[in-house]
Image (tube, rainbow, N blue to C red; front, top):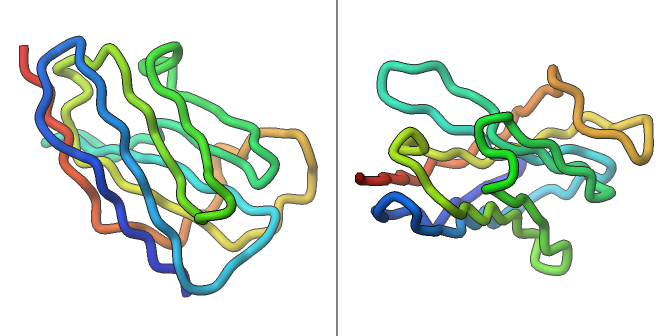
Length: 128
């Protein structure tokens, strides 16, 4: 079992910045993916950014150039730096991870990677 706890959400004005953190504890798996998802009211959950065990990131088109995903391996903590925030970024943000072994080194997390561990979510609200 992996326990994920997000922090860092809050309310900011458009153009502002926030950094989300996800602390992972419990079982440790190697060669896996971690990711940030978000879900806005009335919308489906979407992947925002993913990160492989060897540091390969991917981003949703809507956040490219504004968000940066990173991981502190020593602290087993995943971060999401969000700059130039827009009202449409308002959502509950979730951290997720999986246990499936990634066979290939140096490639991004597959779009259908099975994330089986989820945090409780942290609210991000961006006002005009």
